[in-house]
Structure formats: structure tokens, C-alpha cells
Image (cartoon, rainbow, N blue to C red):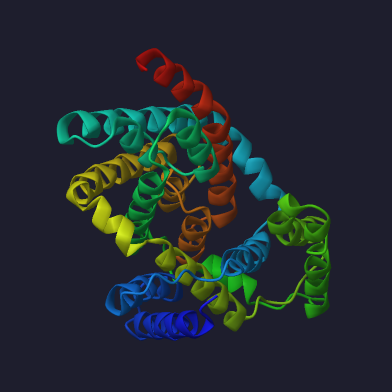
Length: 342
């Protein structure tokens, strides 16, 4: 592991977060770190990926933060949204496949690559399908990275347009208020829960957030989440995202990058319209509706909702439901289509 190189990238990413913070841009530590990590790779011409520890560490820290929003009312208010959310999500999945098909037909991009590249999230399902049906896996992962960066780039504008009254997050301010009996000792329990990850790898990421969420639901009061921990978690996630986009792969698919970006931007625009429709038909506010339909980036969209006064727990629950929908329906859908066309 080239520690010196990724330490340099980390310093550059932290500087980017600081600059974005001083400029008072939305999601400064996350977006600043992602942009400057990729910029450092481009300038230095070194393909250095952030350590694998960065992603799970960010997920654990941010997941625990979002769990502080959890309460019984939030869980109950998600259920009536599902009859509208599930058909809309299926429509968006089909729309992504259609746009991918049009992209391959009009611009000559490999069909399986373009269709799988536009799928909203669930990279594990996409990888499985790519390997099974002969897709170009490296190119597909690159296209997913481009789409994710476009989502990140769109977040500041969406926050500016749809932030709730009071922005700067009245909901986030609630997390900073000390309740009677609030204590930092409660944070030790999610920390201890991480030991379950040693027993089973799949439990590593959900152990801490689920434990903290259960504490909240049972009426315990953790002290306000430390701001420096929240900023550090965003920096880790931003560096991981920025480092996943590889220069060599970008060059190999360069002639299709612009056309794909246009189609990905169109798909993001469709998701915004779907989010507004979801907000119109359900009790969700517009920003939370949009963040729930945005293609990919569960933690990023959840954090955007929390910073702009939306409902981050509902957003993350709906994003997770769509992930499961993609994971379990997409293999059946595309497996049938690819078999019929091969």
C-alpha cells in the first residue's frame, strides 16, 4: 500500500473540504474531499485508491449519526409511502434500462455495458449480472462512478432549490440539543457492536447504526454527535468516492463519456421529477422525495436531506428498499432479456 501517496491525497482532499467549507458550499467536507481527491489523482497521474478501511469507517460513523434521527413516528410514516414509492422505483429502473438501450443503439456503446451502467445503485447486483452475461465490468463500474459524481454535483443545486424553511437544518439542530440524561457513554454500545463484524462480515456495516437506532427507539438519549466526527466521516467517504474514478479507465471509455454523462444527467432529471411526484402524492416534503428517488448514494442523499431540513431516516429507508428491489428484481429482468437477445 503506497501510504505516502494516499496520505498526500488525504491532505489534498482535506484542503478541498476546508475550501468548500470556507466558501459555504453545501456538503463541503463530502463534496470537497471527493472533488479534490480525484483532482489530485489527475494532476499527480498516480492511480492511488483510498484504503479499503475508509468506506466501512465512513458508513459506520455516518450510519450511527443517521440513527439519531430514528423514532417510532418516522418508522410508521414510511409505510404509507410504499404503495407510491415501489411503482415509481420500478418505473425508474425500467427507464434506466431503456435509456441504456437507446444510448447503445445511437452512440455505439456496448449494449450490456450501457444498460448496466445506468442502473440506479446496487453495484453488487450489477457486478453479478455483468460477470454472468459478459458485460465489460471495469467500464460498467466507471460509468457508475461517473453517474455517482453527477449525483454529487447536482446535490448543491437541489438543496438550494428545495431546502426546507430554516435550512441549515432545524432537524440537525435537534441532534445538538442535550436532553435530560444524555450521555456519551451510550456511544460505547455501537462501538462494541462492531465486534459482531468479526463474527460475520455482513454484520460489520449495520451493527453500529442498528444498535444506536434501537437505543433511540427504547428511549435512551445519547449526547449530541460530535461535529468533528461527522466532518471526518464525510471526508473519509469523499476520499473513497473521489479515488474510485480511475484515469486509465476514463481514457479507455473517453469517446463515450460525454454521451453517457448526458444520458445520466437526463436520468437524474427524471428522478427529480419522480421525487416531486412522490412528494405530491405522499406526506414527504419535496427535498426528501427527491433524495429518495435520486439514483445512488444512500449516505450522500441521506446527509443532504439532514443538512437541508429534510427527513434523512425516511430517505435512507426508502433508498434501502429500492436497493433491495434492484438487487432481487434486476437479475430476473435482465437475465430474461439478455437470454432472449443472445
